[in-house]
Length: 154
Ligand code: FES
Image 1: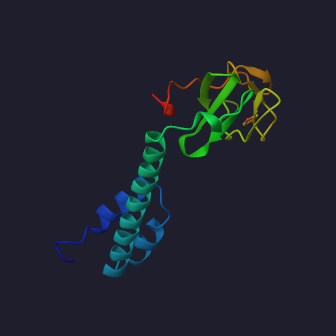
Image 2: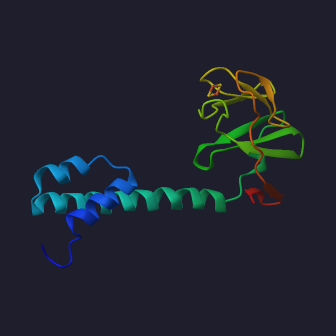
């Protein structure tokens, strides 16, 4: 093995830490090729993880236009796992978009509630509190700042 390639153990450990399913391929063969394949998978996974992080960071850095949040409704921003609502004109709220019941992402804001498609829980757009179960807890609030430029997570 060349000194620039990670050892098989390093590659398998790193891949395992990233949650990828190539461990079997690397350990089944035991050749240098398997080690190289695992190393390439690690490089690709690292790039994917870094890309996902920077995408969310760039969305977070951009202010969300106030005009995109309807009065009496809201908007789900999947990249940030957040729901921003505007219960009354000029009053913006933010909540996690992950349902506390079993972790599904909420998918709509309609009829004054934020709605989870998995089992039908509904949450108040003003407070995040449960309006209809089976969820027992409301959506956790997120901190935002509102300026002339728009709405940003803070
Ligand atoms: S996960 Fe949302 S209602 Fe069950």
